Length: 50
Image: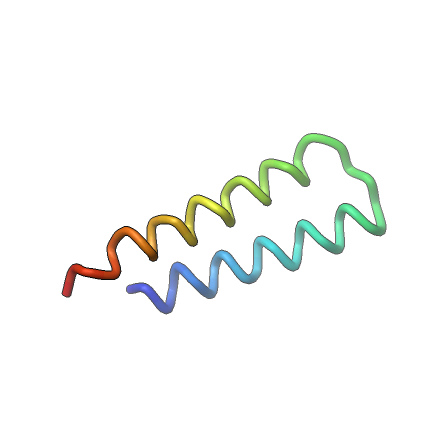
């Protein structure tokens, strides 16, 4: 489950970087970044759980 969260976070961060540097799409880009950070934090918080 953690691998999936990290994969989603990585995809969102890559999308954020591409969108921020190429398209300047406004708020949607920052929403992608927030979702990526939340995914990473969930992975870290649930790290102790099996």
